[in-house]
Length: 99
Picture 1 (cartoon, rainbow, N blue to C red):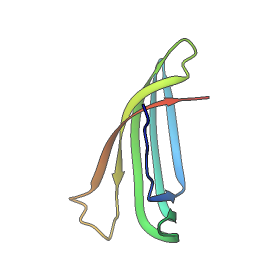
Picture 2: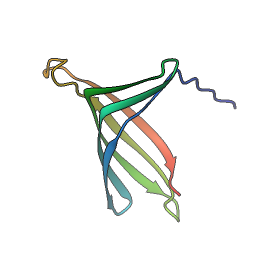
Picture 3: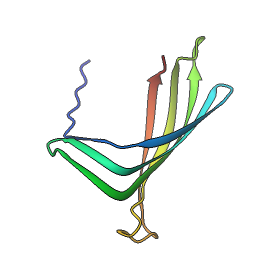
Picture 4: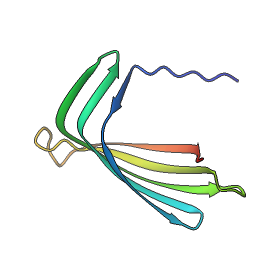
């Protein structure tokens, strides 16, 4: 089995993250944006009023609790550039190891 991914563009931005452990569950909330560094096909930097809040929940598995599976949602908010009645979001599912 071979899996491939092709990344055209990446973005680096500051973010504040809060995490709470509730037994085997982990709740995570983060808020980032305001300044971006893009690299890939287009290399650029920008100070924009675009913000990316994210919420996720994960369940830890195994004896040492280093593997977790979860789901989350990320929003795109751009005040002043978009109607606040409409906003973008994307849902995700993930599996991760924490060391």
